[in-house]
Length: 204
Image 1 (tube, rainbow, N blue to C red):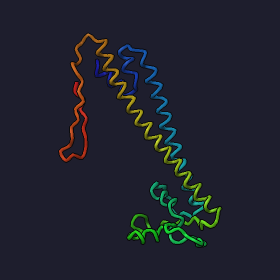
Image 2 (image 1 turned 180 degrees about the vertical axis):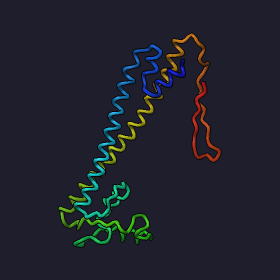
Image 3 (image 1 turned 120 degrees about the horizontal axis):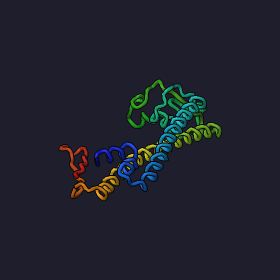
Image 4 (image 1 turned 60 degrees about the vertical axis):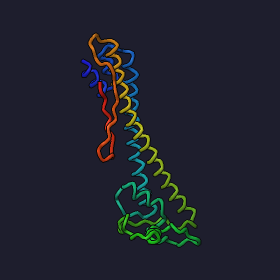
């Protein structure tokens, strides 16, 4: 059954080939899938640790008063030294060091994008220690973003591994089966009426 073979490859790449008796493709697909699963799970777990580490660091060194680990909020905490005025004002402060002042200059309400209850203060950039603190926080957030990119790439590779295995299963079936399978394979793109999306039909 070519349907059973394709279904097996979709669940675990290489199993469709094994079902059809084509053993040479089984190990490459299976080991690739195992490696990708380890990478995806590992990068996700590492990313969660980095975001927790960054949040705890901001609580300890910037007095962040939010228990939320929202990535957008934490990115903002790294972009501005303070929410409502830097403790020990800098001798030559940057125009965008204070979040509230930056929002006012941009013509926004100070709580338009971020709740006014959320406060933090990394301290003056004149103090090398506080600069080290905010740089370390930004470094942890960068590591989180890298781990998320690795996770997304791994998930995409897992899907691609299944697509390749299914297509290879079709090839093996056509090469080894005495039954008529298809005369051609056609990929037909179809757009939604409002043009908002794309459907890809595969005709056998």
